[in-house]
Every structure is written in structure tokens, then in C-alpha cells.
Image (cartoon, rainbow, N blue to C red; front, side, top):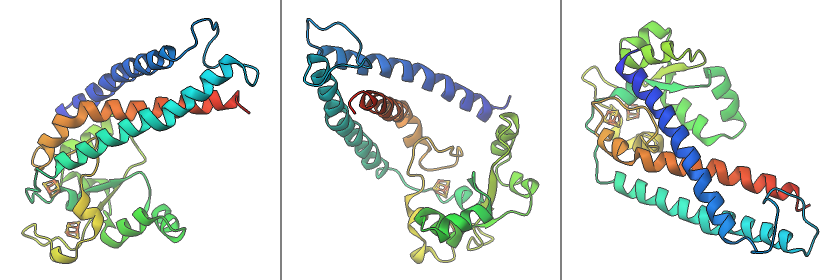
Length: 226
Ligand code: SF4
Ligand code: SF4
């Protein structure tokens, strides 16, 4: 396995550990507001107006408001910290953009009002083959091959000049200005935001796990609140 593939595998392992720890933390906060004399689980059915039902309602409120707001605030801090880093102009993200969607699927999404798909298609055109894309960032394609990720489509921007400059820099769309807006994106070593990604990745994984867990708890508890 190459270095990039190993780091993706490490990331998955790290995520599993962080996820389990986050479940424990959220469960502890739910247990902290549980009435002392109540037996039963947060996912049990309780009669309306019972202590169990009130506990479930408080829990949903805590998850939807307090904890979700904490997650949102921390993610905003991560994005604010990103502003202290700069694009180094390596042009990898202009030369190799990946999407799980084919050009036809992106077109359909854009026609149905998906703003990201619309912007993406206004910038990128597909590579004619994976081999063409491989020349730009071989380690990345190798990693995809090893992880058997078949449904990835490769694109590039025709506005990039031969000397790797943007020929329409002043008018570049928002998705170019914002990239990378997620520290979990795979970035090349040459990217000026790589240090930002490496520093904030553990916290981002934790926030990602929290969002997943919060949604799961809310959905499952609400089934019993109907
Ligand atoms: S428009 Fe410019 S910045 Fe955006 S992908 Fe193309 S070359 Fe890069
Ligand atoms: S990969 Fe990073 S450094 Fe390279 S052009 Fe894109 S944002 Fe800039």
C-alpha cells in the first residue's frame, strides 16, 4: 500500500476510535440529565407526561440546541483558522478535481437546482481517461485503485494555463476561492492548506462523528415521541 493509501486507512481507524469515544461522551451527557429514580433507556417507550418522556424531550432539546451549537461553533473556528493559511498555487486542485458523479449525473443535478453541481460544471470538464488524470497526481489515483473506489470521475479546468496559472483569476468562481473548505479533503503535500488540514483533522473527525451520532439519537428518540 502506498503512503497516501496508508494515511487513508489510518484516517478510517482514527475515525472509528473517535466515533466510539464521542458516543460515550454524548451518552454521559444524556445520563447526566436522567431523573435519578428512573430505570430504562433513552430509546425506550415512555407514556406521555411521564418522567421518561420528559427526559427524552430534554435530551432532544439538548442535542438539537446545546450540542449542535457547540459543534457548529467549533467548525466555524476551524474555518476561521483556515484564513491564516494561503494557496501556494500548485494548481493540483485545478488540474485534478474528483467527483462521485459522472458528467451526466452532475448535469441532471445542476438542472434540478443543485448549486454546487452548477458551479462545478461551469469550471471543470472531464478527463477522457483515468490514465490522463493519473499523470497529475499518481499517488491519489493509486490510492483509489487500492481502495477499489470505482465510482470516481476525474475533471480538470481548461482555464489553467500551461504555466499553471488561472487565466481568469479575478473571476474565478466561489468553489475555487473556498477550496479546500473541508479539512477531510485529500490534499497533496504541495497544498498551502495541508498544514491546516493536518492540524485540525482530529477535531474535524470528532465534529463529524458528533453530527452523525446526534442525528441517530434524535431520529431514534423521536420515533417514541410520536
Ligand atoms: S477557474 Fe481558475 S482557480 Fe478555478 S479551477 Fe480553473 S484555473 Fe483553477
Ligand atoms: S491544491 Fe492547495 S495550494 Fe494547490 S492550487 Fe489548490 S488550494 Fe492552492
